[in-house]
Image (spheres, rainbow, N blue to C red):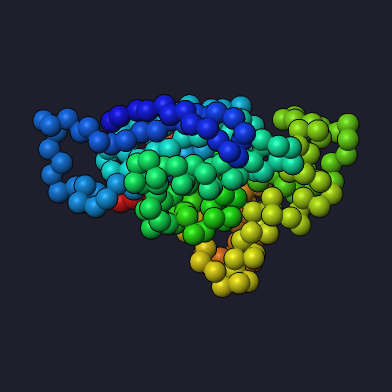
Length: 261
């Protein structure tokens, strides 16, 4: 397994930025692949998104890239919720969903189309995976969303000076824009999903999961109910667990098997 750190100039962010990448291109010669069908096809690609306060590479599904022959691309998106901000140099949605996909495609001949390109993330990254995948259904074939921070309805109508245990009004305003209209705009994954369904466009396959003791469980249940009400096919799972790496390691293995087996 080769692990790379790549710096490039991001036009979306108006500055140099870096991402990490894992390539399953150096399997030891003394380890037989046997009848592993994953190596009889081109290498697939997973864009893996970190959570709030995280960074590229601070969670990696160990051993899975080699098992299923897929590259992992891990951007750092700060605490942006993977959305385009109003300020210059804050286009994180564009950076991940367009620019980085194009860069990986051009430089490594990977992520050629939605049939071999997936996106997944945890917490803020789970929100980012759902939002980015639904914003770019022509680029991502499958979405894995773990313990997703689906907070749009929670922060809607928040006022200046208000806050919650995670952050304050100014922060949410900088990520999501006008909080009076946040539920009605494209920053809401529900808006994107509804639009795709109404237009008859292709919708990426979706796998959602959350721990039953996670503080975000009701947010995830609400999204599950919304997708059901829209008639959008998806897989939704709950199991015992909190908002921690124990739950995420267990469930990313299931998601990766679903994506690439």
